[in-house]
Image 1 (cartoon, rainbow, N blue to C red):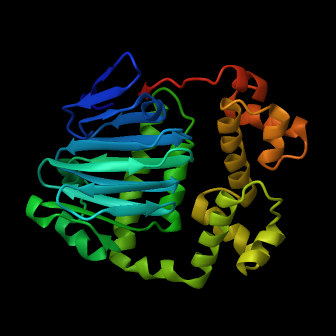
Image 2 (cartoon, helix red, strand yellow):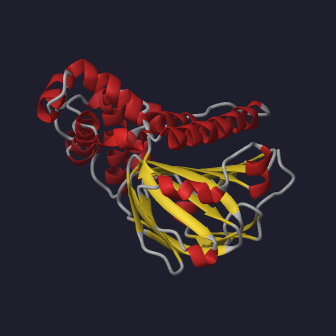
Length: 325
């Protein structure tokens, strides 16, 4: 583990304040969003922050960060960000963000409430990037799909559609279940793999492949599941709706989302169910509302994902603890 530790404090209302860290931004986060965050500080000037949850309240924070190189992958949800003096960068699921700065820079980050979000943020100090042989930061600018940089502040920020390999690595980071000394070892390997694959992707100029018809069809399939998760989606029905061969849909969706169509749909339903139960909806009504016709199957699936039964969740919605590993 790196010797630098977050100078963080938790207020009585559960909000989290992070200050004066070489990689993490100085920011104050509301309790609900702080509870969804896990920070792993790794050797060699690298940190990984993961966000995963279904917040009720929207987020809109102002943050100041030091000189760094950052690659973030939004696996699920929506968000927007902007550097002071720069245009707004709007993000949808499946997009990546590159941010670099030669000196401290301030900006804003926002995300809506009432919807699931999964985000992986990997940061390198400039010294770490140089030691790893990364490209000069300025050379990345020409590869951005949407450039929201602020040149006068020596700050670069832009977004692009993340290729399947980057989404796969980000998903593996979110799903990491290693503990003890194995966790930082595994995550550092994933951070280095992410950097190598990113630089290879930019160098090869493969950005244009994202606009293919099949990629658009896969993204349409994911949007359909996210917007209409309660419907009875079979592979054949979804493939026919978006105009793809069922085998290509299954293989492409796994590469794009890092999991199968059914696994993605199941998680969407169970996250929506958790929000409905917390708001007081009955268990049976919730099961039907999110697309489960079998109450026993719903209860078993809910417990597998959330660790408690739907009734227990409804009576005592758990408050997550902040994990700053």
